[in-house]
Length: 149
Image (tube, rainbow, N blue to C red):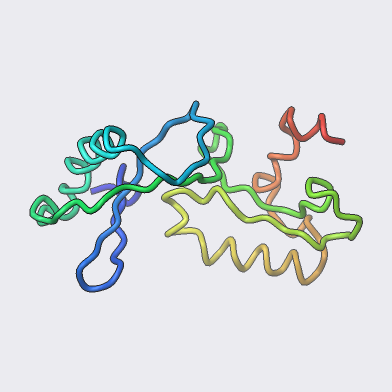
C-alpha cells in the first residue's frame, strides 16, 4: 500500500472519523458549507478509496461534509515540494524575517513535518532564509510573486 494514499482518515474521539479529501481546483467558493448534492458526491468518491485502508468505514453513519482550503505548492520536476520562507514582503511587513510560512506539505507532510519544522525553526532563529533548501523557497520565482515586487 502507498504511504501517500489518495484518501485519509483522522480519528476525532471514540465515535467520529473524518475522511478526505476531494479536489476542486477551479472553485472560488471559500465557504465551509457544503450542499447535500456536493456532500453525496464527495462520499461517493471517498468511500471506496478510504475503505481500502479501513474496510469497516462502510458500516459507519455519514453525518455531513465540510469544505476547506489547502495550500498546494506548484508541481515541479521534483513533485509538489512544500513551500517555506520569510514572507515579510508578501504581507507588507517592514520587519526583516518577522513573518514565516511553512505550508503545502500535502500527504507527504506525515513523513517530512519534523525535518521541515527543524529547518524552518533554524531559519527563524537565525533570521536567515538561506538555511532552507532552495527547493523550499522556489515559489519566490513564480510569476505571481515577481509581479508583487
